[in-house]
Image (cartoon, rainbow, N blue to C red; front, side):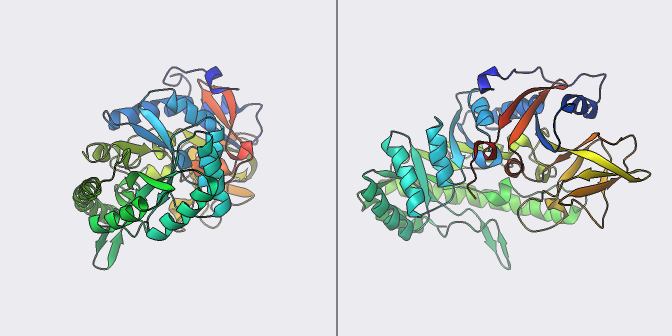
Length: 409
């Protein structure tokens, strides 16, 4: 079913029926495990992203969606959704062939076959911008673009982390941290024939993606909130200084990108920023449950079948071992969601082929149990399709990247 054929539901569930019962009724007749999207919550989150970002254009983070039908649904909502932030260059080339345009690749690559795919899409009139953070990236991409006979747009990745004594507060990304370092790479770009500087990205991962309101870790959360406030001031000053220095050195920047789902409002308020990125906000995965600046609705999950009742108050589901990437820990496990009150058995947690749960009263063999993945788009790597649910029924089944035969990392 095409995106245009997907109904737009009225917001809100039937008041006389619980949320779990509506999902349970909708899933009758469907094979389990199944990945689901609540369209009521998803559409509400799309509108919330627009509210949080003021009047700034929003670039959609594809890593957190990984479904072309939902990417189109977001874009059709408002002209402020302009362009995609891709996680891989081959993904960007493939999306260009699907009709998407203005594709920014968030991570560098100089792999010749991959860059050749990008160059072929550019030769056909699509705009794909590749990320660089050093002169070697520039030199190698210039050679590859020259061999393909195209001029390749580049984006300069600026590191927005906050280095402190004994602590690196942020993600390990670009080596470029100062205006002088940024201008040095810009001069290398300017000296080349087959590449040009299209924009700048300064992503404040430590602000956008780090939980800071976990009731189980109050002291740690308090420290993180303080570090975020310090880092916000540093980001505002340093990102602005770098953009100003590049323009003073002659760089013509089509865009300055920043932010993520956990920092939409603060990033949008930065005068140096011309667009804000958002991805996880659309699905609102479990890893964002304890962010003080995140108020989106859980919209994505997966359903497992109750296969056994091994003891009173306990059920065992088929499958469920879908941990998220990152530092291993309980916060990387899927979160038992509906019915409410379910919890893992501590000695097994989420297993590859079976997942036992306690506090499971009222569930029968064959019933679905719903979970939320810790991250957003990683859920789609496990399933070929997403069931779009509203008002207790499935409106459409749309393919994920995997369902369209595409895997990139």
